[in-house]
Length: 161
Image (cartoon, rainbow, N blue to C red; front, side, top):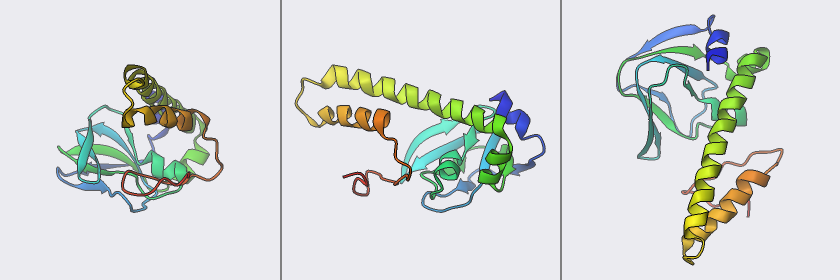
């Protein structure tokens, strides 16, 4: 993520106190945070899904790219030093190297998730249980090429019936 970090050198730096909610699931902010130091927790609903401490980690990118409310909440676990980009869409449009670095990072995440789901499908495809739906998830991840993104979750009906 050094290409992304290099692009952020003119961004505002902020020190954020422990326990501060930086991004709130379901709300819009158009902000990107780039973690320089510290640790944050990512929540979907009340469930913690990740802790992040990697220098250069980008937070808020899905909301910015999909033009939708934040899909998760992010809260500081320790004091965190971040670059803060207040208008993420404008920043990404005006910094193509940063946008490309972000696209690579997201492609790596998708590749990891798809590989994991393929392994789960292979292990459980003969069980005849709800885990058979992993194939449907994989199919959607690989072939979904819609112009308009529709947000869905385990708390809402599938937007792609």
